[in-house]
Length: 220
Length: 258
Image 1 (cartoon, each protein chain N blue to C red):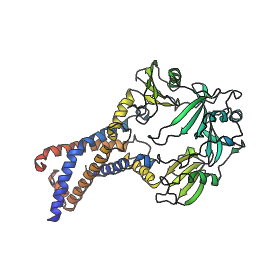
Image 2: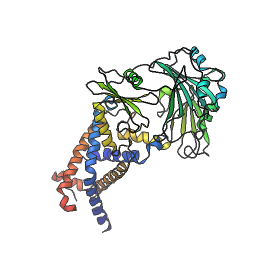
Image 3: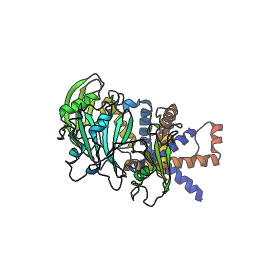
């Protein structure tokens, strides 16, 4: 029974972290660019119909503003192509400057501190870090030097912010692995170790309940 | 004298915390075992939902008739559109316009749908909703009824738009939910998810139905459970330091102290 002290303590500790830290803050859901880029009518000389004629296999065609330019994002067989809406040119790879500009729009008082500096901007084409899903590759990784070590990942093919991390989120991910006792990739909730530990813990709690009842006179 | 009173105090705290927390601890463990044993598809209402099994379909459009983006956007003279998306909905080409992309539950999506040829408002009526619902369904049943639900629903606490509920006649009593503003599939619910949702609610102590584990019940019980574990740990360390466990092995009894 003493061995159970470890998993129970870990569940209590990690569970407390999950509930006490606002998930919205962890996932940075409340953070939106301080100035939204609205679509302006001026800059798309290349019509949607032409994009469709060029990519008849497209599943969706979106029009949006990224770093002060209008682009089409063409969703096609699990990939997203980026097309300049004024020239119609295919953007093979977002430039470092463009990626930086997109990331810096997330720099404002409620998000990555405005005075945070860019630490580095790296292009990742293979071997993604564990916090980034492989399907997002290739991406620009933009690291800031704020107190939470914020990172923004921007797809170099679509210009989308595919995910982001800061240290409280990274701790959340680590604690999640501990909470479900999946020590390799932290994704399999149906593992045998968790089942065994939980089953024996149920017996332990029942034994504890029995003790509470048995020793009630001592504490009442 | 000082340490003795601390020890006594730790035991009293441990006893009372145990008395208070034990039932919720059992709830956490039993629901945890349930999550461990239940297939993911059953937890998430995916058993008859094949939206994750099929490839998305390509656009099917007559480019000659397609309304230009400028024409669609000119209907929004204040330049408030963040994104415009050409997509198929119930076999028809539509433009979906985002005026405010949802990033947090309280800042609701303001979207509108336009016919991609005429630019007229595209309304998700019960027939369109039924068609979208059937497109996501791979169960054996037929549609019994299609009902419009108001904004707030206990089933989807985070949804803030009105929705269509499509009722299927099958063994799981499947209900399919369609967002009545943008036509997106919200998800399937059935007998399996009824149980799963209850289990999530119990595990997250989400008794106010906020769809979140960040709630006052969780805060209180998390801290109490942490204190229970730590006071227990203190007691164990004390027992080891005072070599009480050796006594335990010799006598074969778990009576240590307290």
